[in-house]
Length: 395
Image (cartoon, rainbow, N blue to C red):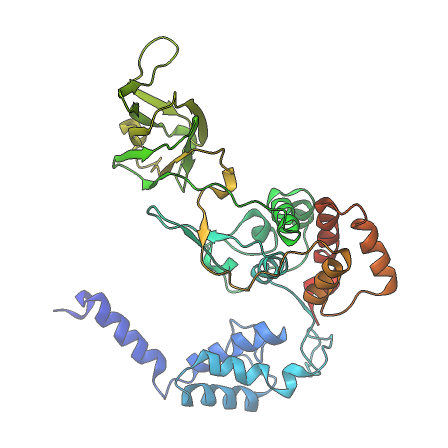
């Protein structure tokens, strides 16, 4: 077999061997330099893309690269080495752009978009979830495991189909608009404040979840014990053009103990109930015990420039639109216990967000926020703390 026709596994093995050869010192030095840059705010070599540039300490770069290779290219070992060093534990110092550069301590730097999102989640207990393609429960995950949200994009996180080596992490007008008016931040704080106070009810679970539907059809046959209404939900997952997608429920029937009750529209029985994407329709069960139907996407919506990915749900209680799939399992960081005591809530926010107790003036202001004992006051307190430079900067 010619070399250019070698199997993908063979090509990957050859590339891995080339990158990790003992004679090739560039790869471990590049890795070490990038981790140093993330943790210290400035690389041993700058710019990080130009490894032919002169490092400000060739001795440190060489030693760390050699130690990294000696320990089997173990990234956790590298992180442990860097984060337990006296250099990392030194007080932060400005002057990262000075030439010639002299290291006096880690540079003050902003939290990344993912760090900001995870910190907010850890304090409020409100995490984003990773949804499976098939039917089943979602699981709580950290921000990096998910697609970027409007908030994290405004904070500098790139979308996944772009390859970049350096982020723009300076405050922007888009960021200011998003944290003030954006729905992502507002929803997170709305739910987080109520969760912290024990006032957030668990959303209802669907009695039917089709999983992601493209060209296939999925049968729905669910029991409706005592339900007077059903909510039929059609949700877009990641279609190219949801606005041009037509999806629906064919052959809907409510089965009662004495036979089938055909679902009827205003004038005549419907062969299929077509719905916009996304949308929700409420139907009266008429006392039926079961619902049967077939869900799918209209054949005219299967064009490659639409590429529909749709999910269908049935609920017997009114659903929460942004929590259609219930999550199970542990959160990445254990949720704090719910509390209603004002002093405990304020203390916890300051301890976890700023690693200190509030001053007398801050305590008075925070107490005024929470004076009415309503979650809206806690939302305002969280927003003011999360937007403070003390929270957003690592010093």
